[in-house]
Image (cartoon, one colour):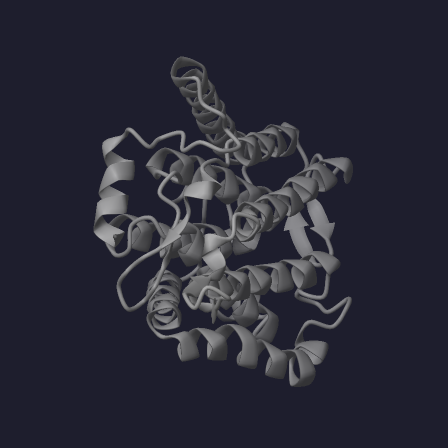
Length: 320
């Protein structure tokens, strides 16, 4: 990792591994039982908001957690978690005497892509904002080191393409197993990888010296379960691991700077290459998706773009 990161002590990478597996473990706990999810993403945040965060994430604190962006990101991630829990578990008995579920309402299925797009847009705005700082040689903003450059524009464009390629949300359904996961089969591996590359570049560009955790570890914590534990539930994995990490950082803001720092190399070439990969992957994804839409005469707002692929069909079969 010498090109991207430099750690003063190898033990920090051991801590990094612990963080990765802890995020995955708590994510599994949060999705396994309804009461666990409510405890982690409702009860705990309320307690932290009242008694901890006003001090540890106060505006202007030395670790940079008191910015508007951190507070907005925290609650938007939690809103996603609670909204997905509602989609999975809210039900009622209708006038017809039958049990109905929230996910049966098409308007409710607009929530996952909306919250996802909002979260991506927040980061896109931040990339453009860092470029506007004009820190061509690097500098400290809001107590975080960063460097402005063309990579901010490149990755901002990649994020916009990532929003545009969000598709197939009317195909979201709830798995039939006891965990009742929110399954989004049209978000196949191609979109997930493009998102991961974009989001890693965003963290590398805008939260540079924290990106080993909030970028690399956090993205692996949701991508590994998506490919090997519960396929099709990527957005659920992403929302829960993101919320868990942000709550931890808001509570222990000195973690990535003092307790287990893994800073970047501050090499402009690394910033450029990372954002170039993100932009190239999202351009390729957008081009391929547009090709499928035209070839198959699909409506991207209503149809499942990848419904005829083996990946899509495998996800559906595993969760029906």
